[in-house]
Image (cartoon, rainbow, N blue to C red):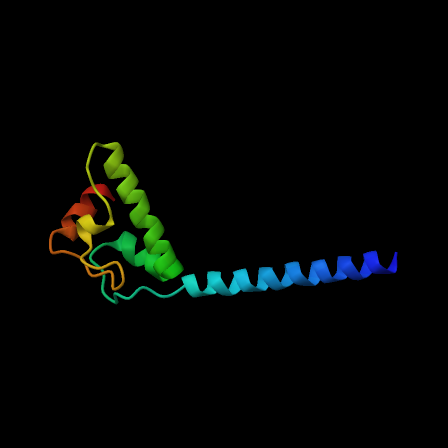
Amino acid sequence: MRSTLILGTLAFAFAVGLGAGTARADDAEAKPCSHKTFKTKQVEAACKSGGQKAAKSLMKKVVKKAKAAGEKINCKTCHTSLKTFEYKPEAVEALKKWL
């Protein structure tokens, strides 16, 4: 019985440790947006409320909406870099169409 209790305690400690690691990964995803000026209120609101994670969520909704309407679109359609999130000159107008 004592060994079962020890194993249970170790399993719990391991699970808690994994949860802590997951929390740190989520914190890393809550990075602020790299852009400081915004062309649309929706993107600005997403960035202010949830940083890059919220902005990415908004962009995924835009892509889904555009695809549902028959557009062939993906991240690289508007962005020149997915590391810096720089966008092409025509990206803002394309985005406004689907917001």
